[in-house]
Length: 100
Image (cartoon, rainbow, N blue to C red; front, side):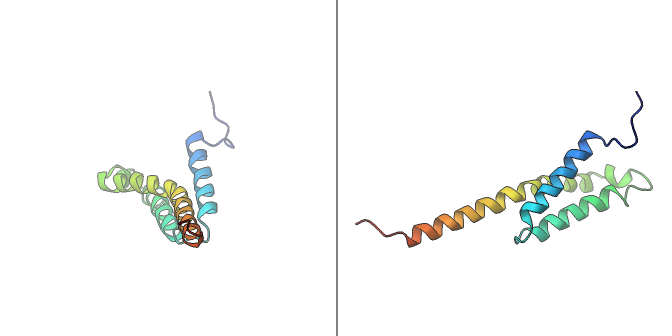
């Protein structure tokens, strides 16, 4: 079955949507530069470095760092939210009157 040229593979579509949602959630937070550098590394490894061949992608160390860092990057949005909730809970607990 021939594939339409306008159709994108489902796995790249999932990664693209995840990148966009992660960037939207992290915009303005201190974790945004970390996410940006991780996605920069992934783009650098998967696009220009593998242009001449798959040798950089087949390298164990580069590939291990790629998947480890992508897992961290996709988790950063929920980590930023949990840090905000923890700070808000700590502030509300400090301001609440104590019942003695």
